[in-house]
Image (cartoon, rainbow, N blue to C red):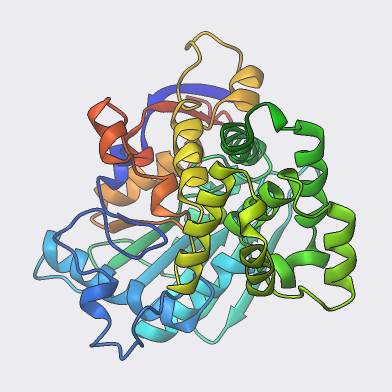
Length: 380
Ligand SMILES: [Mg+2]
């Protein structure tokens, strides 16, 4: 593994990127509010990445992005680069279905076993999975063998989280660690000297397990809020898990009502957070714990490119969120070939973009922050 120096996601994507709220960073492009009527979506509906409707929104945004940069070209093919077969694979298939584009996806990760490539074909759609990020070079050769041209009619969609940044199996633990640190910052601030890190971590790890996903909806905002309520002493972890297993409190919404009924006994700062989360969940906001996500933004950008250029690759990979060099290299080549490059992130906007206050202090959006590009040696 080698350090290829400082770069940023915006070096090759510019501002052509969209986050969880489906509002493209480049405000010339249409976002969900503009597309809602055209696509017949109900009010307040925000499709998540694995839903068919997500594919329809992205296809519209990508078409508009091509029109904006090259009005005489139209997209006919799509390449999707991501890190999970489940979520990214499904998003890819849904984008192809919504658009009638021919498509090939690359799903990567670094894993310790010998190199293995899996091909999965569904009509004219192919998912190419590899257990090395470096295999994206072989993927490029595979595209040529399949006569899958990369040119002005090709859109290349990049997942951000654990693909372009914090590559899965290489650097993804730093992303998770920073989110956990942000949760700790939030609880420490809300509980003051009553904050107990061991109690928080026990609750977080227990409730983060798949067994509790029906209760937490696998939503980190919900999970951190639940940990805050446990840490405030309103209910113990044991009593909560027992009541979830017994089918009481089986949905997060039930738990919110339970807390609401007892909210007068919460410490003032916790009560304030509870009231905000309660209101936002009722209005359909999938990211109701804003202070936690603002802290996640800070923790994230403060751990990008903060180490010296001479630090060892091992040190950088264990402490910094870095760019996946093998993808960056290929993205630049695809861009030269005329393809449209576009970034997709499922991260909440609050964890990716600075608030007005932080922006005034000089904080940049995550995709514009310079950090190290780390990848396997290509002999250069
Ligand atoms: Mg990802």
